[in-house]
Structures are given as C-alpha cells and as structure tokens.
Image (cartoon, rainbow, N blue to C red; front, side):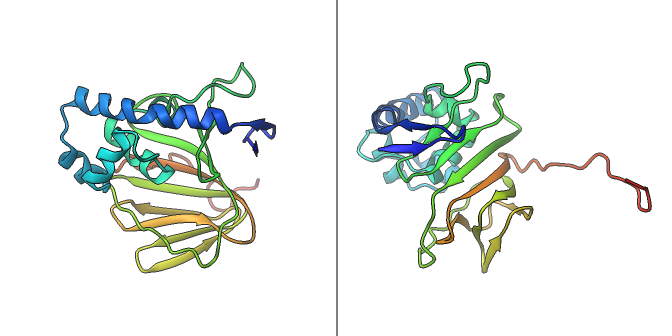
Length: 210
C-alpha cells in the first residue's frame, strides 16, 4: 500500500505503521507506571474508558488518532515522542509524520513538551453519513483549515469549515472532526493541554495602509 505523506512523496508504510503501532502499547504502560497514574485516573483525564486503556496497553487494540492526542497531553509528551515514529522526508528537517491506520497523517510541528502543541493533520476523504464519535478532554483547541473541507461537530453545532476559516473551542465541549466526501482535508491545530490559548500580541491599526 502506498500512502501520500505530507512531504508529497509516496512511500510504502504498511510495515512501518504495523511496527510503530505495535510498540505503542508497552510505551503507554511504561509511561503510566512512571507517572504513578491508575487506569481510572487516566480515564478521567483523557475521556477514554479504563477498559479501552487496558486493551491499548496490552496490545489487544491499536490506538486511533483521537486516542493518541489526549494520551500525549495527559503524559505531557509530544505526539511523535509518544508514538516514536521513524524519521522521514528531508533529514535536515527533524519532523516525523505519523501515519495512522485510518489513513490519516499527523505532522507534529513542535518539539517541547507542555504548553501549546502545534500539529498539521491530513485526513482522507470521509463519508457525509459518518456518525461522529464525540470526545471530551481538558484543554483548548484552535483549528485553521489549509485545504479541503473540514467537518467539525461541536456540541449541538455541526459546522463545515473551508480554507482560511478558523474554529476555537474548549475541548471539554464534546467534539469531533473529519473530512467530507468532497475529498481530503489539511488543517493546522494548536492544542493547549491545560487550557492555554493562542494570543494575538500585535495587529495592524485601522486605517493603516498596507
């Protein structure tokens, strides 16, 4: 199977994905042990059931993107560190795209743990009839659509975002996002684990010529 990576190159990723995802379980268990967190405590932090967390750690279930993100936030690590994906693309740029089994690709854009984390998401075309699996967790999210059409379900609102449009929300609000049948979607996400928000420090004055 060949997958289009964010760098625009085609690559054979099946075996790499299998090895990467198979190694996530032991890493999750080790992190929880190091942090001294119970399954019940982690479930409360992430919104993922204790039984699902147990299966993920035992390798009986492979993690999805929607599970990896809150887990990375809960442990205070970057997504690429959590998954430990192999480096790809230009060796001068130390970014590691993470290909998920659902066809999506995540490109972490920040290296430090804690604070606001930046990611680029590439989601494959979806189904307009897809039943959203809404999740909640601590934090704040700022989403900017680069290309394609993004469907964002936020509480009682079902939104369609197009290139150049932005959504900002408290992630304690039930939410879900995905592509539509119109095709793949690419977007940026700034996620603050403890509710940190992006702040505008400067803006052009009204009436100022550009």
